[in-house]
Length: 108
Image 1 (cartoon, rainbow, N blue to C red):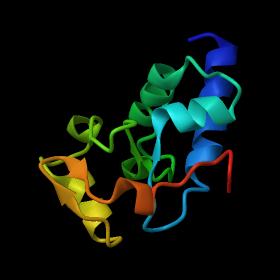
Image 2 (image 1 turned 60 degrees about the vertical axis):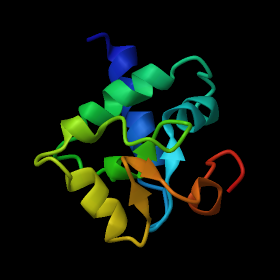
Image 3 (image 1 turned 180 degrees about the vertical axis):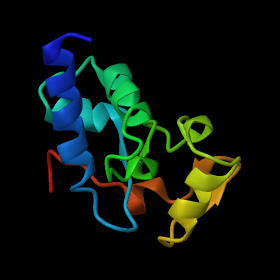
């Protein structure tokens, strides 16, 4: 990977570490916050590479609240279990009351 890609990933990790316990954000919200509005997919790649980096990747979902990154976690339901342990309700791989638990790094 190019050095600028790694720098972007590190910036993504720093934003993800700010997501409060019991809240979630989206790939796109992180990309927007970093001034890279069309880079939601790159944020997803960064989350996939965050294993072992003490990054709460389970708190990053798609814009509709779907657990699209769940297959990157060990076990079949680890992402959901981590979210539920923080009080977030997940039904059929989708966060319920998304607007209530959504955290936008650009606004908070």
